[in-house]
Length: 413
Image 1 (spheres, rainbow, N blue to C red):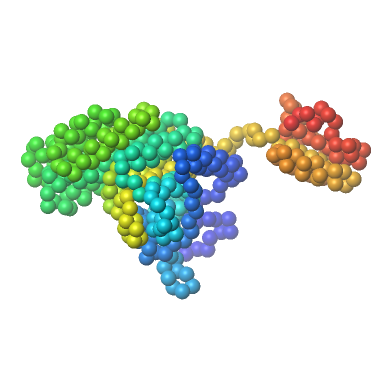
Image 2: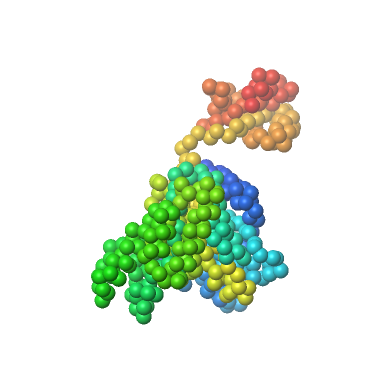
């Protein structure tokens, strides 16, 4: 294997240049402020966790975990999601805090990817976890908050698709009893949105025509409140019925939030069926083929950490949102920055003035400027151009002008 060049970086990671970082921080700040206004407090967990605890509990498949050894030979993992670390904290550090617990986060997560897949191995997520409330209203709260968070992030056109893993499990209990392998294969098709493969697998099974049609009909169960009524008629299984009733209650709550225009029921939406236990959802932006948000109910996770409790939550794919709204590259910097130029005699006055302006919240750049450089500073259309950069004002502090700039220049910003 050849040695990497000094400027190379590993596959799946990227550098964020200043314009992208500024946009990313704005998204982070606005979304976390939105979450805080709903009563969610931010938490930060370690980048590394033990493989035998958080790594095993994670929804991420083992082959996608980044593993490393510490100096004692213990296997660690880079966190692949935030839900499992937060479950660990809730069951340990916060074990005496009464439920429900509302937590938010903004963190990088790491997942090993195939080199040819073109996907990121390190990316940002911003999300919430609501622990200790099993009600449909709790699920509706996180969906409504996901909608509010997407708006806060600057995503204007999107749709949230909601499903329930219990409906499909109940339907399969009746129609595909004892056909465990076929059930898992059909679920995998739905998880991968492979509807052609789903139909083909149904045709390969020895099913009577009414049963096959019943199982195929779920591909058309997408829409509004009316889908709940259709699903109730499709299956009389107790698990399926309870699942649809849960979605009906959620819809009622979402109507109260006034967000149903952004929501659709999609009973093919099952999420990771080994992880989610109830409601699950994904958010799709109009101009992006990948989900920008995902979440759902995972009532079994905290049992693995010794504090059984129902839980629900979601994560925004912050890196994808940045791609969607643009990272600002090539856009003119609208920040009103001030340039203070000085010579040796004016240095003290210039630096003191810079400090005063920064205390007022202004962005100030100082530079020792010679006579020839000062002459190259150009003012155009109310802006100051210097060395290819744009400033709102130029304040000179030279030997013959130690009294700061004149009033007209001071008033420019």
